Amino acid sequence: MNIKMAVMLGATVYIVSFTLNLLLQLALTQNQNAKIIAGITGITTTIILLVICTNVYLKSVKISAKEGFLFGAITTIIGTILDTAISLSINSTDKLGNLDNPLFWAANLIVLTIPTIIGWRKSTK
Image (cartoon, rainbow, N blue to C red; front, top):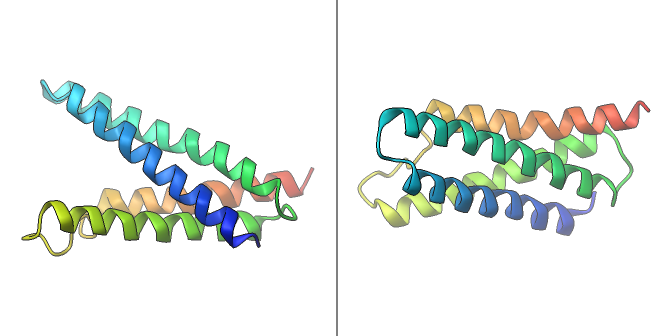
């Protein structure tokens, strides 16, 4: 496992997707349909970034489902830490931040699953 690379790419996934999603939310908050479109676009952007970074990471290690899972786990941990820190710094009255939001946990499951599947598929070729 290349921890330095995993941390760097995991942080990249979070920071870039957070920034793009924030800009989308700010640009498209005129009505409810725009919020839905921004949410779907944000999830799609995160998935695309995750696939790209997973492929870059897997080039630096022996390709396997385990390596994909470990990359997904590190990305999830980094995302949770950064998201909690940002939530607490913005809204100090909400101590849980996004931790009580089911969509937050669904996104973490996606971030954990996609690299595992990519690692598994690439290792079976």
